[in-house]
Amino acid sequence: MKQTCLYASPFVSFILITTIAHVSARSAVLELGDIDFDYLAAEYETMLVKFYAPWCGHCKKLAPDFELAATRLKGHVALAKVDCTSNTQTCGRFGVTGYPTLKIFRNGEESSAYDGPRTADGIVKYMKKNAGPNSYTLPTEQAVDAFIDNFDASVVGFFSGHASAQLAEFLKAAAAMRDTYRFGHTTDLQLGLKHGLQTEGVVLFRPPRLSSMFEESTVKFTDAINSASLRRFIRDNIFGMCPHMTPENKERLRQRDLLTAYYDLDYRRNPRGSNYWRNRVMKVGSPFLSEGLTFAVANRKDFQDELEEDFGLGTSDGGDLPFVTLRTRQGHKYSMREEFTRDGKSLERFLQDYFAGRLKRYVKSEPVPSTNWGPVKVVVADSFNELVNDPDKDVLIEFYAPWCAHCKKMEPKYIELAEQLASDSNIVIAKMDATANDLPPGYDVPGYPTIYLAAKGKKADPRRYDGPREVKDMLNFLKKEASHTPSLHGNKQEL
Image 1: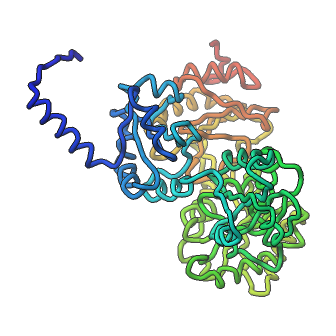
Image 2: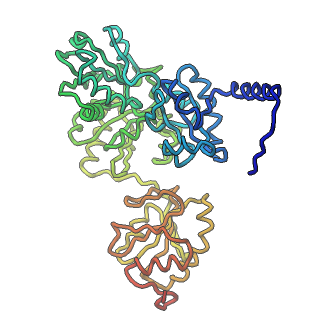
Image 3: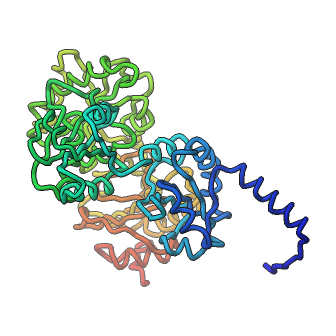
């Protein structure tokens, strides 16, 4: 665009400057750029920066929530934005390749990517946890007691002085993990005596609300401290035997085989009632810990959409009793259909059946079609093994979503492909609604449509098709990857 420089009188300049200042004052979000980013960002202990482009739809969608969060966080955490279309130097320096990109800065230095929710409430909650130092200084016994009396777990280091080499390693771990966990430290070793420490060390305090007769509320780390070993210790011990699963920590908990009891859990307004069912899970689950299974409890309302999507559980199903699921790291799902009895016997039977291999996996599936005569065969989760894993067939399968525009555009071409191959009894052209059926192991579907070939003799290693979605291109792919040369209308296809 052609730019024109206009002369402005001092009076007009004053009006313009005043107007701009007034407009800026109405926004709680700071505007930073190539000229002023470094010295302005350095003025704030904690700052969340949004790197954006004015034309970006996702950026426009985020803007109102970002502004509201900035207003609510004013005085605690600064929120700023950088227009990457006019400040390419700054955006390039911080590796911005997509919009919006959110990063956390501390005293002007990049600290970490922002991985929290992108709603006003989510940003406020996430950034309040990130405000302040990596580790809080706790000079007195009262300060230590107040710090650990918290809704969340606490990690406290006890050291001989500010020059302690172990304190330096502790602070490195705190800087790396502060987005997830709470850290505090003291340089008065006498304060550690109350918690069983005779020398320098770290104590992990589990949340008081999760105190239980089934496990200790504290875990001590008394080995020589280095950042890597301390971080590993925290990850291995922070959750304890049966933590409270939330939308924020669910991914960390699900890195292992996990049994979860969902019910009307509310530790803020009803901690005693919330622990009633948790204690029963812990009592029954204790003997099974050596089997490699972990446990959790969760507020059913927080996961209602997920439970309905993954297990077909409606809002009125199950009543007031816990609904129990078990997810493995491989993605297998099980649900306890027997009512959760107060003596825990039903849960014990469920666990015994699981480890004995007697449980049937829960698979979300549409009904198997009563007829399937079309050129493109319809596959559902319950028929996947029979149709796609047929050992005598090469099967090309499309995973689609009914609402996907790209899938609708490709549909006539996919049908044409199936019609051309209809006389070839060795090849099956199929499709599956990936929104209504669980995906089988080995099939990653990052978007729609996604196409795989499950070739004869290679069913355990399906090959994804990433080429053009034209009939001739898909035929070429089949010629190269199928177990035999495709035959069109009874003739070998010359490609």
